[in-house]
Length: 120
Ligand code: AMP
Image: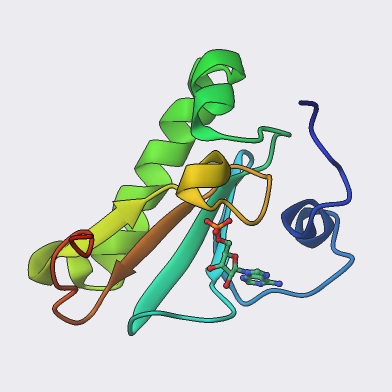
């Protein structure tokens, strides 16, 4: 599967559609999720064309990976959810129900998030 440059996050990165920006540097963009599931629901994306976490882990350079992980920590601290607790997740593929095929982490917090997954 090759990267689809028409996905919505690629369009945000190209400035074709707006986002509520939270953080940006050379390698990373973070913005508010359009359908937030918690008081804080930020999407953190690399600027490079990576489909999934596996793709990012295998293909990204060290500077991109370091910038990405540091951005996640920085945003959590700035939102005050480092102290209160939060959840970081990445959906992948069909079972993970990934909707947008550009790698992203969901950073959610600001309330009790309950158990990680409902039991079937
Ligand atoms: P996922 O299922 O992990 O691919 O989640 C994709 C996320 O992107 C969902 O939480 C959507 O609400 C969010 N989303 C989709 N379009 C936009 C957009 N234009 N701006 C911000 N968030 C978006």
